[in-house]
View 1: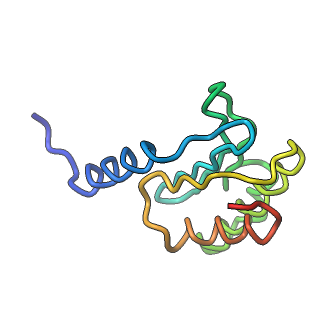
View 2: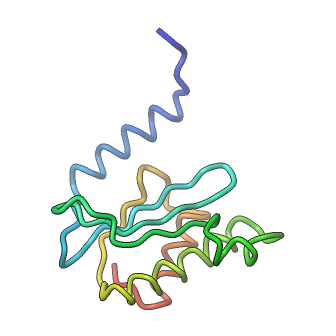
Length: 122
């Protein structure tokens, strides 16, 4: 058996525990956050229909120039603002927050607070 990073295993365990409890519906879709070493991604998902309603990341063309040269937390705040804007355009105001097994601090917290500040309720 291959060596597996114990931190990755712990995150997967947390992720499964979280996903057992939350589910996105059309009335209240799920705001899922993924963070890699350099970038952060957010998408709003309706789990009942299996649809991604909207998505953005620090790599999207609208944000790529704005995030260049900024700290990762500042980039996460910009992604949070953008996902809130895109959600309002789709008519989504309330979401369920899925931190995807990541701890709620740093970039994940910055993204969620920026989304709340810009009109998303969760």
